[in-house]
Structure formats: C-alpha cells, structure tokens
Length: 438
Image (cartoon, rainbow, N blue to C red; front, side, top):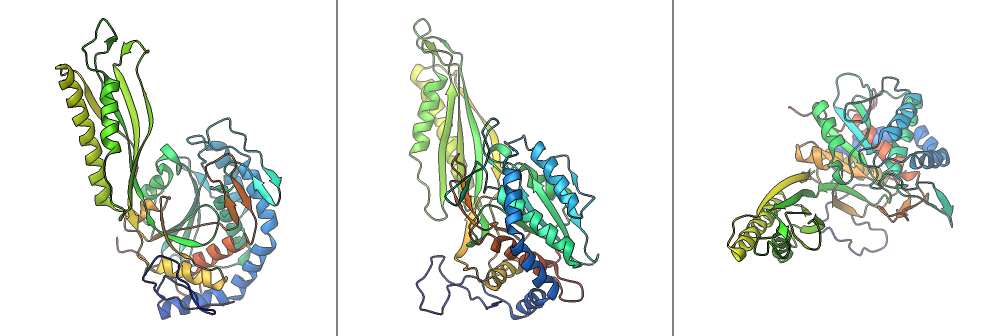
C-alpha cells in the first residue's frame, strides 16, 4: 500500500511532470494523514479491501440486475423496492423507503461521533418504455443507465456488505441512501428531502458514474424556467392586427440568444424546448419555452436569470407596441433549482478522499466542478464531495451507454477507505469528519 502526501497545485490543469513525480491538488494535514494511515493499516480494513476485489465479478452481476429494472424520472419505485431488499440482506434490517421515495438505512456508530451520509441515485434520464436489457459486446456492457448511476448503487451495496462482514464499529453514524430525483426535472428532490429529514448530517459523499479520476468539490448551479406567453389569439386573416404569443416568444428567444456570459466563472444558457399555437392559420394565444441557465457562481447565475427575464419582458413590450395593443403577457414558472455550492479543497473530506486515491495507487487528475447531488449539501455549508464508482465507461445519457469493468474494484475500495477514514474506527482512530456546531 502506498500512502503519499499530496501538495496543493496552483492550477487545475494537468501539468507535465518528470518521472517519479505526481501532479497533486490537495494539501494534507500531517495529523489527519496519521489518522488515515491507522485506518488503512487496520487488519480488518485490509481484509475487507481484498474481499471487495475478489467479489467484484459478483458486483458486476448485481449491477446488471439493477440496470435491467427501469427507473425513469418519477418512476423509481420498482428499483427502490429491489434495492431495499438488497440492503436488508446486508445487515441493515431497519432500512426503509421515505416519503420522497428514497431508500434510507443507518449503520449506527458508537453514539458520540459525527453523521456521514452516503448516496447514489436510483433514477435514470430515460423515459418509460426504453429497453434497459444489458448486452455484452467486445468486453463492454451496453445498456441505458449501466453507469449513471447503476454503478454507484452497486458500489453502495458492495461497501455495505464489506462493512457488515468486517466487525468494524465506526465512531460516526453512517446513513446510506439510494435516492430519487437526481436527473432532469427530478431537480435533486431526493437529496433535498434527505437533508430536510437529516439536518444532523455532518458530511456527504455522492457516488455517481464511472472513471475514478477526480474528486468533485464544486457544484454547478442551475435555474430552469418555463417562460409562458399569453394573448387573445384569433384567426390569421380575420383577426390580423392582434399581437401573437409566438411572435413575442420568438423575439424573446432572439434577445436571449444574444446575451453575453463570462467564461469565468463559467455561465451558460440554452432554450431547450418550445411549444404553442393552435394551427398554422391562427394567431397564437399561447406559447412557452423552457430555458436552462447554469453557472459555477451564485451571483453570476442570478445576473443571467435577470437578463433572460428582462429580455422576455422587452420582447412582450415590442410585440404589443408593434400592433399598438397591450394584450400579450409573460409569466415565469420555475421548474428547476439546483443550488451553486463548493467544498474547500483543504476540507478534511477532500483530504480523506485524496489519501484514499493515493492508498490505492489511483492517479488523482484533479478537482472537478459538476452538477450532482452534492450541490445541495455544499449550498448548505456541509462538507460534500462526489466520487465515481470506478471502471471505465462512456455514452452517459444515451442509448449506447456502456461500462467496462477495467480495475473497477478500485472504485468501491477507494470509497470504502474514504468512508472509514471520515467515520473513524473504535479503538483505532478518531473520525476525520468534524461534527458541525449547528
């Protein structure tokens, strides 16, 4: 086992290094490293790591079984019920499904430690009716959702099994959850519910996707709206002269398309869908478009939202002025709110993960900003990171999504070490994760 000290890199880019050197991104506190080493060297931990590798082939079969249970947005019930039974089989008989649809199970600690929440999401982006049968071709498993996030769910079960058999008592209470609503219009509803119900949580890890290369420490925020335009409508010939909801919408989209956004912090927008009108020979009485706005900075996201809404109001005014009839209006309906968040790279939760990468000889390529379930705790000031479940893969969110179990055992091993370092082991090491004052 190799345990090395990591030093802060000033740039997020991957630098060229000479032989024997490694680019690194996280400063490690020496006392924290000593706690990590004590956990990593424990005989029970070492035995569990070996079992995780030996049982990876069985885990892949479980991954296939979960993949083949469809879990469209807002229809995760079948997969949740299956996952609940697998959790109970692994020693957490009190596991349950909460009011939001999340599977929740707690592994108690000594009673005087922090609370750590670990989650992977049940839902996929694919609607009902999509065939999720797994096919094996040329060393790869193909199926919609095979990686995102069935891999994370599989890792949760592997870790639960390893903990159950290890005889390890942690200082921290560890809450395991398979949560709903991470994708699309799910709007992180599952993890939002978890933090409403478990405000005592001191730290959070999301296991999401494949390719164990980076630690996600930033949450890209998003605001999603439907802009709804309304007017009187009428016959295209007989009522000509009335303003059109679709014309107003078109003016708005054109104005929004010309908005300028900063490259740093990265801020983006897109009008993703449009709808409206009655027929080709009708002046439209209604029109609506859906817009997605994202940024890595809360203030920049708020500015972008104001600009988009202002553009729509100006478009309405111009359409009404064009016909000298004040008949068109616009309403803004919020359909998605993912908060911006960040976990400091010096945080103990980031250090623990970085040390786990080193312990397993996994090259840490850098820190990442993305939109995951970790956005919610990050926005609440709770230390949170997202780690992948390991293996290789690609085509996420497409029918050709694939997964390859190349060194995939390193995923559960790395997450396992991170969890135990944060939670601490009775008689071995105190928890790295700190209890929050509030």
